[in-house]
Length: 362
Image 1: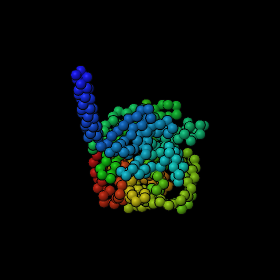
Image 2 (image 1 turned 60 degrees about the vertical axis):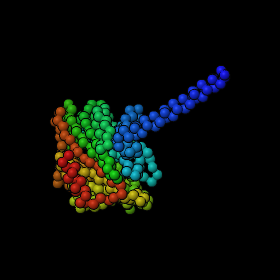
Image 3 (image 1 turned 90 degrees about the horizontal axis):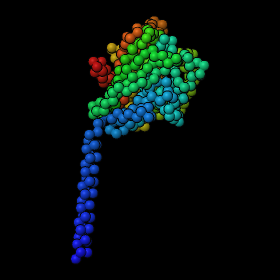
Image 4 (image 1 turned 180 degrees about the horizontal axis):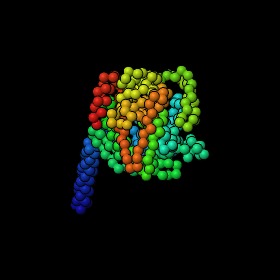
């Protein structure tokens, strides 16, 4: 009898244990479901150890704010379409077969300038010879002041210092990045406020500036000859002719200029279109009417440099205009730009003019 009783008790305990595990499993599944529901569409994930903030959209990487010591300014890298196609060049961070390896300072999406109190922030990289590094400035990430995920947008606010070679800070930069996603569209607003520190800061009129993106090979214009480009310090860079298969980038701007003619022209926006595989896409940079130098000149090169330069006017106008912008101590100025990446469409002028008007009131 006792043996039978023990047998019954054991069965009861076993059934209870199974029911408990089943309930726990269901509770765990429900918790995971709730976590998925609670997760925001646009997630900003901070990783101090790797010196970056990942921007995830629907669980997939869109871009990262990175500030490694191997480059001389924080950048957004890579940039991807809604399909996951990378549109920024890999070199020098991730060298990729078939891509150009010129201009190692062209990394992802960045903001700097070629002549700030005589220092070149634009062309600085680890490739600069040691004996020449006293001619270059470095932008150093200092802190993250806001990190906000959301369904409509993600917001990242950061502080950077524009430093001279001796470590003294010429400018403090406060930048807000706003990341949005809508269907096949991805956008980044970059609102950058620069504040002069202990002394006046002069932005000498210079070709090398200011908001730049270095695009992947497929977004370049087909190249039919080798070229040599010279930076502000007179350093030549050879840009050889490469295989043009799959290379079909094409610029056009708000004023009706196309291709290489967009370089050195003023415009509200420039669109760089291409097709990668079967994916049509548009990469657009919008200027803002409140910016110094509006409408900006475009330093848009057919070999893959896509940049807006509101301060470098002399070279673009053949000497007819000059803008030597200055900031007095403790004074600030703000630049606003929007970067739009659209998969599946080569946007037309009417659509982009409307999008420019929408951005202009922000």
